Amino acid sequence: MAKTVVEKLAEFGQSIWLDNLSRYLIESGQLKGLAEMGVRGVTSNPTIFDKAISQTNDYDQRIAQLAKSGKNTFEIYDELTVKDVQDAADIFSPVYEKTNRLDGYVSLEVNPKLAHSAAETVAEGKRLWKKVNRRNLMLKVPATEAGFSAIEELLSEGMNVNSTLIFSEEQYAKTAQAYIRGIKRLAQNKGDLSPAHSVASVFVSRIDTAVDPLLDEASGLKGKAAAANTNLIFTKSREIFSSGEFLALQDKGANIQRPLWASTGAKNPAYSPIKYVSELIAKGTVNTMPDNTLEAFLKSGEVKEALSAEASGAVQVVYRLKELGIDINAVCAKLLKDGLVLFENSFDSLLKAIEKKSQSILVV
Image 1 (cartoon, rainbow, N blue to C red):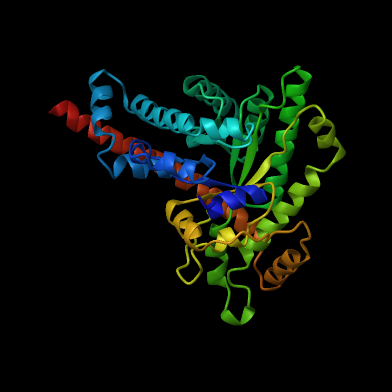
Image 2 (image 1 turned 180 degrees about the horizontal axis):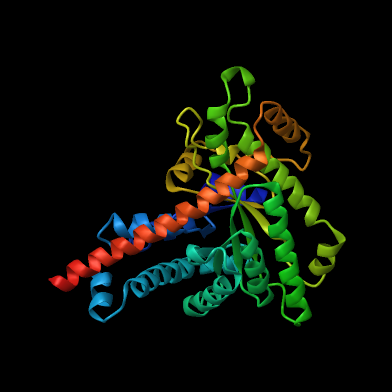
């Protein structure tokens, strides 16, 4: 059987993960089918679960059972999402084994309302790690100032971490350093470094969505800010993970924290649906795609290296934007703030949907 473009991309050195998870995907066999055609992991977030639970009836029977057993709204949410993640992790367990733990991960977001509390994030991360009880779980932690401490702490205890909502190069660098500190502590505690894996989720398309309306056509810069910013982060990653500090850890079995390109669905209909896939192909990275982007890539995608550690072109784009009064770092800071609010709102919406369904069930 001919290899899919996703399988060819994996052979090249970039893994594709699905940015979606639902009970339907699991029970219909679609998720297993995607794993068999070369998709190597799954990411989820509060917005994804909100859509899956509030906009379908797929969870209603289980909500009814849990509500009648006396579970409160948060406990029902916890049971539903943990079960989805466990089942998805089991589906991707063969990928985890086949790739020698490089891929096969399923990411579960720690309660986004804890994003500014390191201690609470760590406590919740530990609880979820124990409850999910799957070696191929990745705990998603936002890359906030508190999050950096939590990332370090969770990694120091050998848990896998997906550091998320990264927008700027500075934010990425802090994430990578938190990873190195955590792995260093794990080594000091005589822990086995080889099973501990992490990705740094860099959000891409939202940058063009924010910057494009500030540009006129004559600038020639529309649709270029996101790729340039991502290229700078990719270059910083190569720099950090070729440093003597990390190479000493690598000699002890440490894995590189791979950059993961997130928010890769093209929001602008004028752009190719695979713009943020084709422009970001690079070895040693992950691209997590929503369903429609993955479908488009399977149909028309090509494997051709696009990102390079040589970032002079990206630097030039950022410089030209600054000349036009657009500070990419300020844009990234606002997007982080907005992203945290968005996930909190999705989390609230999800809990309200569960509460509404629970109450209607109990009244009946």
